[in-house]
Length: 136
Image (cartoon, rainbow, N blue to C red; front, top):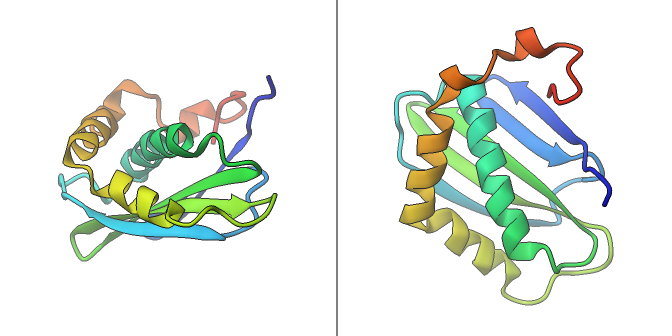
């Protein structure tokens, strides 16, 4: 099994996690998330994006050539997520974007994602991981 390399980009209040092979947004859905007060922290947004990415991958792992991307945006006190990615092997089946939208709107998953992301203090700050093989 090959290991996917993840690329993280932080620009202002936006954090994007993408598979190294992702070329852009061929497939996308957007949803609002409950604000927890931690949305301004890029580590929180990265942890949140990785949790959403894991569930997105579980949902679409059978979609050939799918390279996932998740973007978390914190703007004016509101938190939103865009999930999807690029399709390297042709178009997605009809209804795939609706499946992603349902995933993002699921309140039980939202609670789990936010609870995990809120445990930012349990991970070393990104600056402490420079040179670490799993550094973003």
